[in-house]
Length: 285
Image (cartoon, rainbow, N blue to C red; front, top):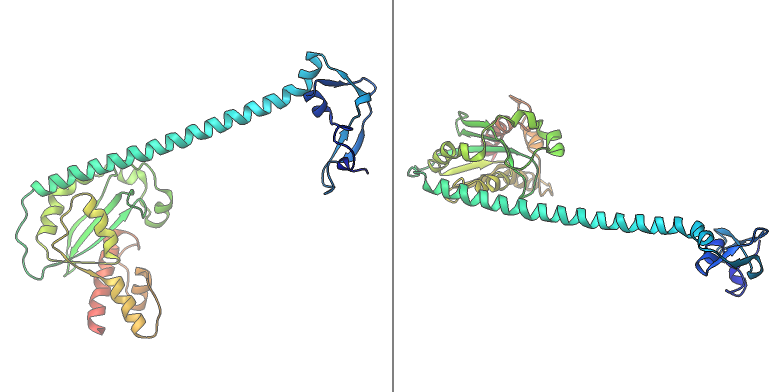
């Protein structure tokens, strides 16, 4: 089979190319199939000038209209995609502004609440469940126990903005239905502010993650001495030949043969497991 590019460019054209030049095929036009180029991947039917005539508008529209419709569909799709990107961007901006506003209001509420003087060497253990791992995610559960294991606080939390969290749900098992009737963060502030303001030490597993979420809803944490059991465990492993930077709570509890009191990734069960691991770390340190 011949290759189209082996001939002068004006010698052969496809039906569409002739239509774009204002020509239509003769009724007896046969054409010749040729490779489009030397790569010999795609072929097409090409016609010479002797096989065409000046086309009528109807003849030309018959060939060109599908091309126009395709181009219009592509244009509409691009506009729709651009509009969707703009809507998504505006939503992100709006959500961010709303969250900043909520944080400011909650912080003002927390600051206005009476805070007890901080006694010496009183510790709490905390854990949370959230809709995800980013700053724009929200709390779903907060649990606080003291250093004797007594439950001081445990509640599901209704998020302000998120209506679903499929990836986080796979981990923590908390569904939108479970928190539909739960209190919003501002409804929990009085009790949480009282608990946190009375304590001087905060223990957790990857504690900065949980404190970040609590800080964003206005819980006072600046006065706390923070103990991260994950860092203690990683330091212990590395001192014994390891090279870890992180280790999961499940890994830590397995190392110390902890018997779970509830499902892992329920924040109350995780808080109790964290306290156990902390006490074990104190023993072996």
